[in-house]
Image 1: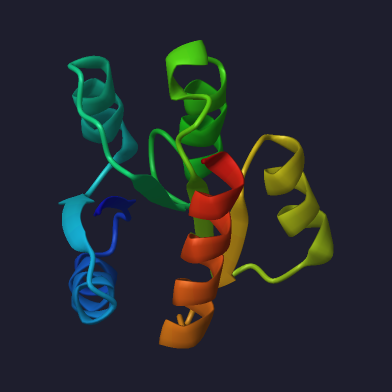
Image 2 (image 1 turned 90 degrees about the vertical axis):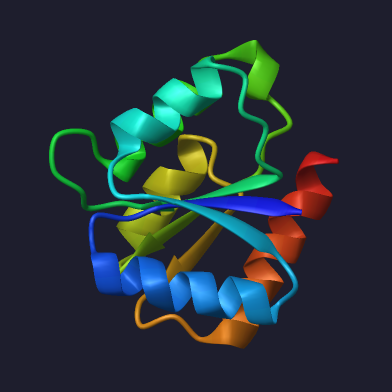
Length: 123
């Protein structure tokens, strides 16, 4: 399974790559949402997306709305990542169509649980 991870923090991309590899996933990192969106439009087919919420230019919430606005990606699981742990933020992401939410710093067991839950939900 291939997980696309979008985060503007290079260290977070490396840490998530390591964690996802430890969980048996292949990864494709993106520093910004725009290249990830372009890759989707070009026919890229990840098994799930991990989106950081707070990114410059195009936020993770913007990317989530973009993904959920397209019928061809109805079954694409999306898990949000953020340092923000407020219920209102989590609820907002769920309302926009996120399938899971992981707070930073990321714990590998929480990441695995949320990804598995999101993938199962969208199958």
